[in-house]
Structures are given as structure tokens and as C-alpha cells.
Image (cartoon, rainbow, N blue to C red; front, top):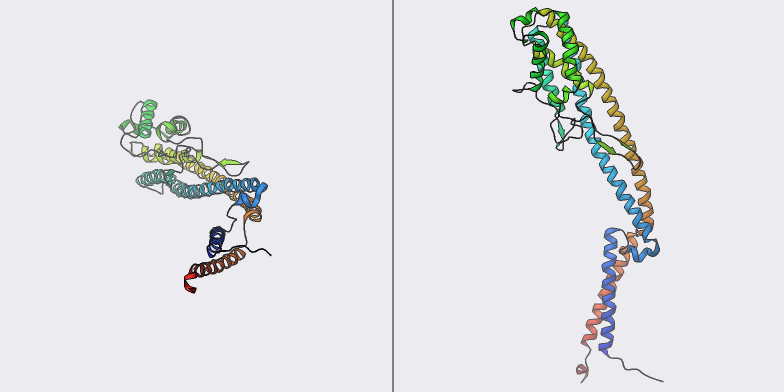
Length: 348
């Protein structure tokens, strides 16, 4: 029979080594309990690590699109509110102009209502969300609509010059009282309307772009996510208000003023219909974005389920293992302390 020499120091070293391994293990387990995942996915999954990484990358990419869709939805929701305000403005102005054509409204009131329309419309179109102008197209850092009533307004100057060129005298000149309804109607249709519906609009009124913001709402779908102040409905509404507010400040006779009112009434009606059309199209886009986000979220949930099967742990089991290791560590500390107290001196 052979015996081996065993010292208390050797036993203590062995316990200490085991204690260090348990401390490392408990650090790993505590990390797993907090995160709910294995501490080292590469070690746990081996060859399947690439699958886990790929799934998590897809989750991040789809999650980014969902977040982007939420921002686009917020922008479109604010845009819808603006379009509703414009529709209400157009409807109220249309009622006022209809009554004014029948001589039921004093010209000064018509002029005041028109000025209010242009001012309020400008405020709505220049609204912003998170520092981005909603109706500016892709130029979100630029105020879309110029102030028609500002000193040196290019829109007012263009209308005044057009009248001077067409009739040979200013709209404020006493001679303007000689303009009849037919002449005024022809001037509004063939000279003033092109200023709003043509290229002059972006010179005198608008700083917005026709191009709107494009948003990728899924891996395969993109859509417009904004509305430009250059749409026909906005131009027509500005035309209706500006013609009354501007030319009623001149020396037109009642027949010419009535021609202006009829023109403004017609354009307000067209604006109302076109703005409503844009609002409905915007609502359809909002629904597309919502549906796309729902589909993406379902994909994300599926991918998360697959990742869960690969790397997630049972938190209750991990907690139990932590408790067990803590008990073992306490026992090891106690044993180490007792071993250190062993000494031949105590027995001599």
C-alpha cells in the first residue's frame, strides 16, 4: 500500500482554484439572468452563431424601418390636420364669396375675409414638425410660402404690374373705375390665373419643391410621405383670396368687383375639391404605412422567436444556479478559513 503526502496548503490551494472558477461562473450566470440570454452566444451556439447574428441584423434593419414609418406617420398626421384646416378655410370663404356675389356682403368685408384667408393659409402651409416644414417638399429647412402682405411682396408686385400692362393704368388709378366686368374677367383668367398655376408661382409665392419626401415603408415598398405647397388646390385657394384682397384695394367699379368675386368663388370651389382629393390620397398613404409597419412587426416577432430559441435562457433555472453557486462559494470560504487555522503549533 502506497501513501501520498497531502498538506493543508495543497488542500487550500485546490479550494481556492475551485472558488475562482465558481466566481467566474457566477459572473457569467448573473449576466445571463439580467439579459435573459446566454453570456457567450458564440460558445453556446458554435456553428449556429451565424444564424443568430443574421436574424438579429434583420431585426435591427426591420426595426429601423418601423421607426422611420412612425416618423412618416407623424408627419402625415400633422399634414392631414393642415389640409383639414385649408379645407375649412376654403369652405368658409366659398360661403362668403357666394353671398358677396349676391350683394349680401359689403365689399370691405369681402376684402377683410380674403386677407384673413391668405394670412391663415400662409400660417398653415408654413407649419412645421420637429423643425421640418411640412409643406416644403424636400426643402424641409425652407419656409414654403412667402408673406403676401409683406413690404415688397413679389406676388403683389407681379399682380400690380400685370394690371398696369394689361390696362395701361394702375389698379389704384381713378381710370380703373372704367374697367367693365368682361374686361376684368378676361384679365383674371388669361393673366392672373397663369401667375398662380404656372412657373410664376414658385417665383412669387412658393419656395417649396414639387418633389416630395419619399419614405421606404418596407423592404420592397416606397411611397411619398409629404405634401407640397405647390399642389393645385393650394394655388387655387391663394388665387381666390389674393385677387379679392388685392384688387378690392383699388378703384374698381362694382361690376368689375363682381367679376373678381365670381372668379374667386370659382377658384375657391376648385380649391376645396382639389385639397379634399389630396387629403384623401394622404389618408391612403397613411394606411399603407400603417399596414406595412404591422407586417414588419409580425416579421420581427417571428425573428425574435427564432433568436429566443437559439440564445435565450430559462431565467428561473439561471437564478437557481446562481443561488446554488453562492451557497457553494460560502461553503468554500468557510472551508478555506478552517484550513488556514490548521497548524501543528496548536497540537504541540
